Length: 326
Ligand code: SAM
Image (tube, rainbow, N blue to C red; front, side):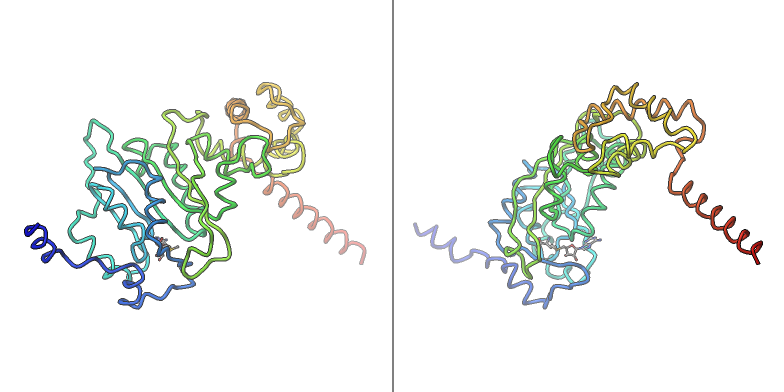
């Protein structure tokens, strides 16, 4: 009992709360950087729990801000933590609870067992959406943080984007993003955080999404080729998929090559883009890759370029006709 009392006397003062850190370092949220902070530690704990077991894991947190997520990551026993923050005002506030930790990536290239790597971040939506596309491409090429293995990601998105990322075949929210993410990962929409949980409050609610890269991507074609197929298929969302897919081909061969693509992929041309499954996208990507091998220059074809040239030629002819009529 006496010993307990004695220990209690020497207990270190508690770390300041995130709210106190913000006040102490005068960390007013910058609108230009879309800063909205999470102050409720139960919520930040819950987000970090979605990442899975972080004991001895190597973690990279993007956009730590005042440190709402940083603390539960360290508490979960991460071996290393790399923080990437654009706004240097946050460094002094992060220092007190990072200084006892090794907070840089410490990964050796010559490892035989893949390290347990995680990326965690509550980022502005204008950053998280382009970043996830970049990370998906790296995942497909096994470059960047995916060169060591199946690095998992736990990230926040605008609620509607989170729903699109996890939308299944045939659902209203099914989009390009759903296909690109799901052919490479198992994607889970973990939970929604109401906008009112942030300070200042954003105009939208937020979804926490967890990505686990698949051991083998469901489509075994280069990322850019898959992206091309998916982008074209979704070009006319409400029309039959044939309408968007035909724009993959030059006008002179459009009908013939579209027919060949759909036939060899065995995909119904009257499906809506939202109704095409991942295995059908795989068949389309394989068939398109074969067509590209057989038709030189097809892979670089851009219907917008062809349209632009056509308009230019038309304008040129019209101006000549005008001159002649004078
Ligand atoms: N993680 C903190 C939280 O949950 O309270 C802060 C979230 S706030 C929405 C986003 C953070 O990302 C800010 O600290 C902002 O400065 C940072 N940020 C914005 N753009 C960034 C970028 N390109 N790279 C790294 N951090 C960025």
